Image (cartoon, rainbow, N blue to C red; front, side, top):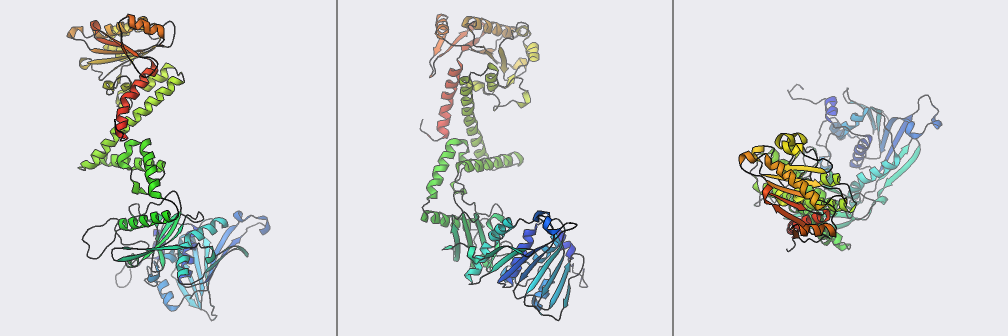
Length: 601
């Protein structure tokens, strides 16, 4: 605290509050300072030291970086610049976008900074005051030495060249607009590694548009794969923020089909840059009021105009993205119709897989919101429930296709049984998504209680005593409470064998139904019993079904299904071929799918 009672930030506390960085961010800051000092030539040198080894025997990645030196021929540390250098969050050069905190980045990664400029020598350390002294010798350049790295720094010069080009492309473009040329030379010791100048810049095209009373200039490079898909928002002849750095509710979602590098400039951006940090704008994500006397503009409006201009640019280059978006949206909808309410052509995501992925994310966000918030947003609730119902119908189609595949591959009965309902299903884990008894009949979709051997013994003791176990058998209902059971589904999976006849399977199922009913005689009532048996169908088995008076239901598969009601045990026995089962289930589900996909029935 100073003598006026104001809190004074120490260098150490300022540096400690800064986020973690790497050496490239330090270089970006140093080069930016040089550019703002109107430097035309910038030289960066990486100086190494080798301990206990001969220099020629050590590869670059094994050398220890001693310091980085940045030289430039800019205006240097004048008295005004020196005064600003000593002030935290200085307003000096704020018109250039300077944040007033950049020099403290140096000390995040280096113990000490030495600066030689004009007739000044400046020492800058984390635990000492800034020391400035004059020298008799006057030089016409500024030399910044970043000394004593706090951690090991390994430099890949190929990567560094690309990083510098990508980072400063927008800055160089703005300098070209002012007819300024800049050269950056990078050395490792005395060996020149690369040079960057304005010649690497692409040719920018330009579009102008207006939002309310404000003029905007869009400079862009279209579909040049050498440059990143990125946008830069500028103010005061300097880049303020990149599109990728903006919050999700502010940034423009860029296209996937091509790259566009753009710079956006405007009087509106100049007047709405943050006055203290100059790293963002005081622009709301969405318009706050339709009646705005000050002609305020939101990010939503800026992005809408940007999107329309980029669509126009693409069209001028032979790409009708609106048509492509509609086509991919249709494909995505056909693949996942349940996500219909969450597809948005304005998402700027035109690959169908990306559309599906992004729509799923939005659905999950709404689900989590509804489950965790005491919401009265009935529109969102209706949207989620509509999508979940549609997703359920869509998932049923996947189950049907899986059943078809199992039948085609002649899988064993256990695999098919687990598709209907997994054996040893635990009550607390059972729900409409794990129960696929709707494959037999939609009325069973809520029957989620699979009886274990222990439960069968307790609830149906006679059945347990006479139960044969060579085949897969499941007893399923909607409750484990004996006094509340109204329906029982019996599923018997018979192995394909010449020894299994319809008569033998029928006799066994009737016995099961009888044993189940015996447990309810004392209540003078009978439960409804639905028996399903699967055997190997052939012309002989069909003849036997007809002779025993079974009803026949024709299907689109090779064989019909057969059923018969037995009054004495209040049971219906169904004989079904696996292929018939899948075709019948598919036919029932198809109506729902047609509705989901918007087809006429």
